[in-house]
Image 1: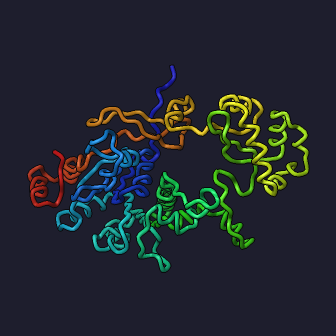
Image 2: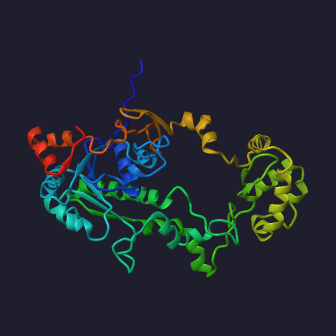
Image 3: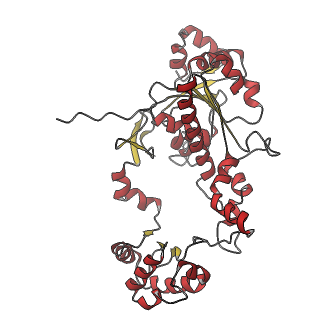
Length: 408
């Protein structure tokens, strides 16, 4: 009989104090929680993470936590503390003494004023890995500027290259810079933990939305620095490949990804225009990029003759990369999503059944997934303070003084 599989938890035994809010930091700490870390989400006593109150909500008129919050806070315990109060700061110092990781995303100078900056906390706990997430980092003339995902989309040039020529700039709607900054923070934190195994000392890790946004622009900036020419906007197309974009079919749109000349010849044979696979205007990818308008017009005419699903079947059978342009409903119903395990269904004590996006990494064939649902505001304050050996009488006194908020 095979042994039952256990949930992967490579970070079991690691404690994280998470002062971050909104998206970049919470994405980072949710990944750490999924990997088995004990993440204590430290929230302001004045209402906690802003995204708790961001629409959309699960139901219209619902005053429960917003879906953005639910998407990035699985696996955490919430403690609500007044960091400006003497009692609140004393609690944080006690927690920091035994923590392995601290993450904060305060504005410039705020962490120092609150006593949760790397220098202050390393005096309490020299083995602490401290990660600071900011908009523009700690150097340069923009270091004091506020940085949000859409601001960095604009500042980095990303906003200026998305969309069709002549149209207004288009924001990438899923906050890629926030999320990427969270991923970069995870990378730095895990490297710092590995280094701590050798040195027995913590490290100050920094991640910023600016650095993440510039890293996204890597090969586009490389081209600009080498050639001195700004990239053109190609809608769903690719500056270096053709045909490599979305096309209309007889009913629904399709994405076509012809990334080399062999695929182009296969497409031409499938479409009944094999002779154009060798036509000097289209024979190589460089030829097709140079003659983009003619290539796109040719492919557009061909694909418009049949429905999307017929094209998907034919193209897949011929080994030509393509995809339906799914709605979220279509993606949610697709067996690839279900069988991959990327849709995570779990229970919440207040909201009932919830679904979330699972951790995108597997360990020995299994996904690491946190056991706790997203916490209610201050849900675990009393539990965490009890672990600090505070009595219920002392906790109630702190609550009555406004130093903490307890749900129970």
